[in-house]
Image 1 (cartoon, chains in turn cyan, purple):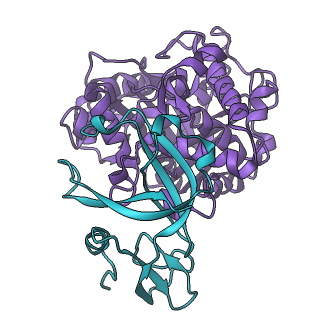
Image 2 (cartoon, chains in turn orange, blue):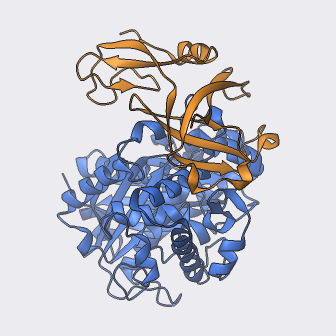
Image 3 (cartoon, chains in turn yellow, brown):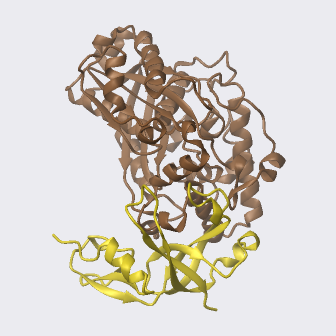
Length: 136
Length: 391
């Protein structure tokens, strides 16, 4: 069975600030990031759908000790965002001072942009990553 | 299915910058386990070896095969288990199932790791491989980052002020260091105070250095045998009476349960059901304290505390020897160290020692302990549990 929405398609779309997900025809759940099956019911009758990219921060961290190759980026904020269509996705948060943010971030409304992780020797190429900024 | 027991155990010191290779460390732990079982290497019928990152730390794949040859278990089937931090626990669980099935009578299981050879930047990169490489890692997620996000989510979900949770987390680390002082194999044998934990440098907010386990080198191994065989080999067989294992999706796919780790709840229920036991029957627990917050989340999943109240166990001293549920009397991953591919075998070694009553001299014996629980987490959710019982 063919993969309906691959990582590469998802990533290339995100590079154009379009966030793609999958809508389940059985239970209507939106799955994002994409998978072979619906995150809720495991169904395979899925349709590619464009998501709004809007949501709210459910949790965050500020990374001070970064992986190899990313040391110059730290400190940086990583957030988990609950999209208005339901699913959660991981991304970075910009337009903040990472050293000064705290629990007040949780619940803030954000909107999606993107930045490209250019990849390293273990990553099989580049990857677009969600870049969130405040929408409220 | 036959009853299965652990007949012998072995454990190297856990340290930074070991002068030995992964094969050499495993061989030392394995020979101790084999000798303690009154066996010879050619009695071993199969080997299960946990190893997560040897490809990166030593440029060595297929370590299990070279281990078999190194210790004189010539041409036996040897299998490498890779599940990040839970690798060795999976190896022991599968060994127990193989022996229970009757396929083999005696299997050697354990793990080895030499993470410190990578240095912090590469180790941080490779540990993050226990997260989703396509949808989480590109944002610069690290392994501490996962539990850091769970800590903030924990405060938000259960309406606990961050300062209060941080203090409870510090108590977890302080207790681990306290018991680690008396563990001869521990990487850190040094007391820490709450103040020291709270003033250590930030790794991934809110996790500070002393909320985090170290990078470590070390190995541990156990001999798993059928009941009939084990009784001939040792006066103190420790039975594997329950096991469980469960997988998990990437962090964002776990959105319905976080900060609870659903896979751990599934895994430990399998183990409890198989053993016909519950949390109230556990006399001692070695749980996966890769980070201080991980311990608090773990005691809830394992049934020792209500959700949102795990930290109170440490506040009230209920995780100490002589109290409600002694936790990580080895010093845990925090103080004993965390050679990831070996950690599950190290935890199992500790529980076996406790159930045999052999830690009196170290001042760490939980008196009368009969039933112990091993809890290991791999990456951002995969879970494995073992319940061990003395006769």
